[in-house]
Length: 404
Image (cartoon, rainbow, N blue to C red; front, side, top):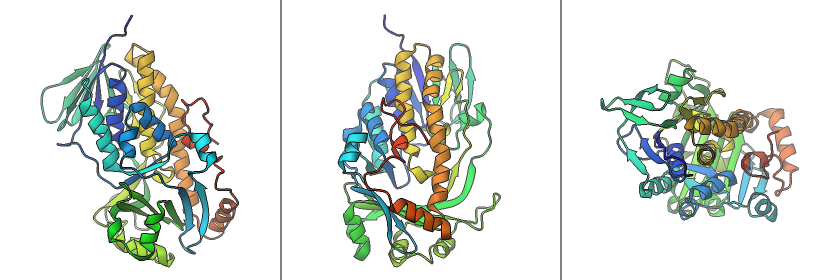
């Protein structure tokens, strides 16, 4: 017997929402995706896709499309932002890497990944995409969910709903009610510039194609090329001394210059080329166990928003989508499928969510703490992936490692 076709609504047209829509449709169900913006798009700069994300993209059928513009860096390099000396590096082209993870480590522009997922959704006959729909409410019955929108009195009725509406998820607030996201007091300035416009040491760094993290006290700078190496992505992150929850006057450009004033010349030379048109306060939330609420389930940042220090935000949303698709293949009842999906994903996502905070603390050490960090990491071989393997190996992989 074939399973009945469900109509599943996905709320949110970002990376997580598009991936979820694609995963659900590939199981044979019908999908309506609603996005509050007037058009689909992604803002921001580059992002890193560890091998767990590449595996998920392969399962979603879009890895080849993403690889057409992505860069496969040869190394992940940590540098000391004050001394300018290398602390440690991981060789992403070693036999040890390929035998252990089997899928590439990629860096890409957010818009390129988003466009690849969007194109796949647009081409899928079972996916309907609607923009300009802001969800204001959800009403459940034993058999369906009805969504209300700010722009129209017309309701959308579906058998189930996937809430992939991001950090400030409206549906999460309706269901979980855990208030505002937690501000880390850190802020990021980020953007990508044409490699052709770069000179001197900046041009040399870009030509290496490595992901470089300059770690310093309460600040760091990340650099890597994207879009076939045509653009160079830079992210400058620092903790603000002027943060107050009732003001937006913190994390300013003046503070950026102050915090990086003691950095080495290479970092200081890069700083003027970091995009300043927008600052990005960094938020996460405390983990919650209740992702499933009857016929509504949370996914991506709506379920587990995390700080960026393990470069896993998008990766975990992609893992969510794949796990959701697998659960829908195994269960005909959407509530059962959602429960199975949450059981597969919640512990792992929580571990990465909490460890992202810890890795941020390690990255931003000062004084003796930074000296001990540097000595410990410098002793590691470039093909030693033991400490990071649990992050890069999804729990659905039979060779998955567990969290420390």
